[in-house]
Amino acid sequence: MMLWIMLVVITVATLALVLSPLLRKRSLEARRVDYDVVVYRDQLAELDKEIARGLLSPDQAEAARAEIYRRMLVSEDAEAFVSAAGEGSGPSLRSKIVAALVVLIVLPTGSGVTYALLGSPELPGKPYASRQNDSEFVMATEAEKLAAKLESNPDAAGYKRLADTYFALRRYDEAIETYRKLIQMSGGSAILWSELGEAIALSQDDLVVPEARQSFVKALRLDPHDARARFYLGLSETQIGEPRRAVAIWRDLEKDGPADAQWMPMVKEHITAFAKDAGFDPETVAPAPPSLNSPHDGMITTQSPEPSGGAPSSTKAAPSIKPNTPTRDAASAIMAMKPDDQDAVIHKMVDRLDAKMKANPDDLDGWLRLANAYRVLGETDKAKAAESKADALKAKGAVVSDKPVSNEMPPPSGGADAAKAIMALPAADQNVQIHKMVDGLAAKLQAQPDNLNGWQLLATSYRVLGETDKAQAAENKVAALKAKATGKAVGP
Image 1 (cartoon, rainbow, N blue to C red):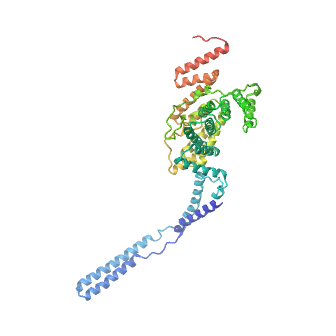
Image 2 (tube, rainbow, N blue to C red; image 1 turned 90 degrees about the vertical axis):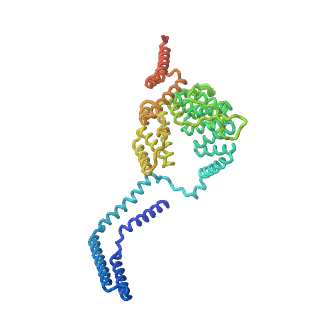
Image 3 (tube, rainbow, N blue to C red; image 1 turned 30 degrees about the horizontal axis):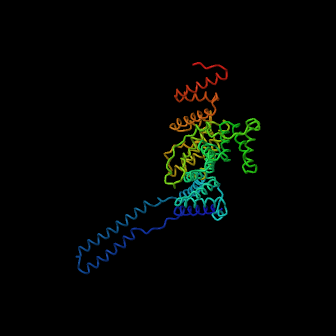
């Protein structure tokens, strides 16, 4: 309420300053001729003194006096002409009233519209004093202090505490970077790798992208009993349409885990829900540990180890961690989902971008991405609202960065939605996005080699892209699957 009172006071004060000169009567200014007459009278008095001292002859004095009188007459004539010309030329009272009304309406209305576009009037007030009792605010403050301290005095215990704090605050991107620094310093334990994988997955709305899966695999190679890694590797199987394999992994985790573990009810809930959705009895699925050499790994690109870049040396070489690339990894994982699941994930990603923009309203590129995303999803009103925000920022002088706006576009789903999403991209990005989708499909088929429809789609895709050899290989696979289904051999 205090904010609105201050805004009203400021608006009234501004209107008073603007309207006061407009409505004030014109003051009577001293005429120039009055000043000139005083000067000329002084000149006449001085002339009389010079005559008395004998400095001027009578003829010279008379000529000088005549010149002074002439100038006085010219000055009065000029003033009379200016007064006649200026009379009635000022604005009328009606014009002043109209101008005042325009200012009175436009200034408050324009300010309100600008605030509605660029501000966040829906956010509740949060006085600084009340934040001292807000646990999240206290944690964020402590995290900032700890991060500043670690810049000058890095240590593993501090980075672990900072990473856990960022994770608790749901600031997953910062948690990911902190876990990476910690792993480079310490060499990486099973817990750190699984915590890093979980942060990456949560940053992608529970989507186990290849980088997250790679972290979980490394965790299990260090500790085969790591519950977090086993759970998420099971979740990754559901995302490529393998609910039975996921249930097998979770049942194995259920068998080995403590009955009173806090996470046990969640594991049982997932087993029941996914088995029911897929239409099978979970008791018919034998428990099995996750494969550490799954065909999923074909979707992961690795990187040779790099120097730690000035980090304290460790007795164990620090693994190189590939920077997070959510768009590419998410696109590959989403391409393997069912259409309904794809749409749900895409909407969640767009909603997350919308929330991000409310927290960072001056990001022009972000508003453009959000508008483009809503256009793809067919939500025209939301797209227009985002475009209005972008236009308002452009009017304030903001410029689009050199980075393509589409780089963080939500990955497209299959079929018509994918086509619409790609058509919404700039021409330079369309080809890149299409290749990503085709590569994602190819990786999926490595995990599902008997998917006839998938191989047919892949062959068609390669033909469209002009990659004849790959198209021929896919078509050979189609022919082999058809022959296998009919029991006929495939000829040369």
